[in-house]
Image (cartoon, helix red, strand yellow):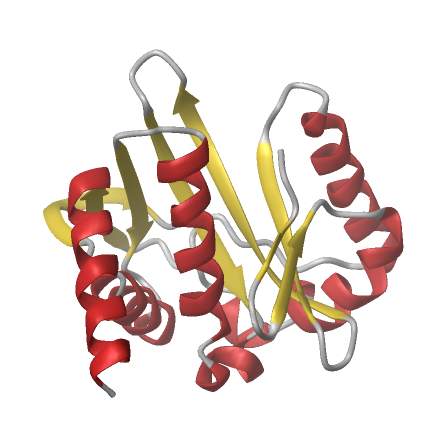
Length: 196
């Protein structure tokens, strides 16, 4: 796994020292507590254990990046490329960022760089992102980001999962982008920048 960089972010491996930032920025936000798969942390120690599991996964070549804001040297989010297959040239991307950083467009910046890495250096052909739509704010954020990146909505699997916190059925939303689609969009964006 390679560390990456953008104008505003270092996209790098997690370190145990990131626990305080993750705890403060991501692990205790009550606005997210009803999200399927999200668990509030009770202590910084719980966050350290989570980060330790990420560090352990690096030995198995797992792709889990911390998003560190350059301005404050603070970890504000993560990107995880999981379920990847070198044979099928495919992976599934999960991501999250502290809600207070949504308006800074860091996630779009980070995902663009990670997709460049996955398509150009890992030579994958397809990237998928799946999420459940139970939290309107998170659903709207993820939909907006993925569509800005040029990903296409492939499916909405209706009432696919029951959220154990709310008891409600949630739809599973699936987006994807191929390498060719991503490279073509990048050419168009670069051409537009040259014209400006």
